[in-house]
Image (tube, rainbow, N blue to C red; front, side, top):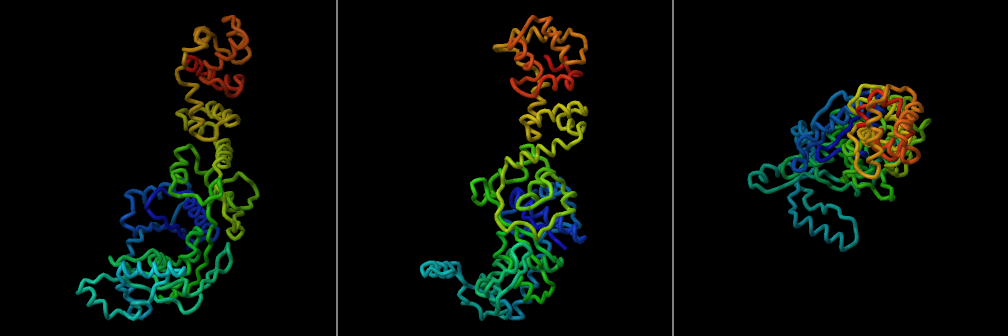
Amino acid sequence: MLRFAPSPTGDMDIENLRVAIFNYMVAKQKDVNFIVRIEDMDKERNITGKDTEIMEILEKFALPHDSVSHQSDNLHIHQTLAIRLLEEKKAFVCTCTPEQLDADREKAKNNKVIYRYSGRCSYVGAEELKKLKEDKIPFVVRIKTPDAPIVNHDLIKGDIETVANEVDSFVILKTDGTPSYNFACACDDMISGISLIIRSEDHLSNTPKQTHIKTLLGYDQETDYAHLPIMLDTEGKKMDMLDEASSVKWLFEQGFIPDAIANYLILLGNNTPTEIFTMPEALEWFDLSKLSKSPVKFDIDKLRFINREHLKRIDDKLLSTLFGFADEQIGKLAKLYLEEEASTINELESKIKSIFAPKNFEGEWSAQMHTMEDIIQNAPMIDDFNEFKAHIMKESGLQGKDFFHPLRLILTGAEHGPELSQIYPLIKPYLLEVAS
């Protein structure tokens, strides 16, 4: 069983999408369930509707799931398991005030050592709960520090050993009775029987804590991990996943398509048999253990190239529907621009719109364009571009740049682009609409 566990606290970013894709692909390869768990315990940061948006994005990338749940649905189970650890003296009640904890952190900082919980309350057990609640004294529940190092098996990084004091006595139940991130995550993975967890390298420090929780709860099923190396920007710095340019929604808005985005994210840090592929094709050779251990660099120009190649693969008629047509000729027209300068749906749309939009008959070439418009509107249907060109030239008396430049403007609305001899056969049925 594998899972994707996003938080509905913002737009889905490309790093998170990569995690979702890899979890889905490995689940398919292993023929096990792939589930989605919306981690919505951070009520203050949750954004209404983001959980639905996440699911819609997964659907666009053809990542079907076997089940979907919200972490908050398991709140009672989280609380019950935390109290069980208290009763078994594997956890303790902590009444340390924020001021005391801040003082401890400041002391550690001054001594230039890593802050660890002081153990001040480690003797307080479950028997104190009733009195604390009656006296309305705020408290949290902390787990006891492990007695031995914790070893996690990582399919990418190899075995990772964490010494006991690095895990520390961290909080598992907060003052409002809700679980901490690590406790809720560990409990839910245990309940679902997750056997492999693929996630970002950012979670490396959480892994031994979650393993410790499951061990104290008596969970003995082995869990493997795969921590994906971090993603860098073009300057070699860790990408800011709060930047809109890192969000999947922004990529869609710019005109990138799901097949291309998935292709690019699978390609990153991977040695693939071919550069351009679909996810079903990648399932035949994808091997999680062969991913690079080094950070990967997000290159928008590389994504543009891959997007262009995938747009070329789309059926001509289907491509035309993106621009309001159902005509394979318009699809072929769009692909002419893929060979020249366009890489996204947005860029193609601007080229197609320019051809079919009313032309600007003002400016330097106004007279020539008006002359050509009259001739085209009254011309017979001419199949061959050279014959069309010769007819306009003969009727107008225009030559050289006085002919070719305004002809391009009246047929395409742009000063540059593919050869008119390639464009003409594709727009010929629409000529009266185009040249006006």
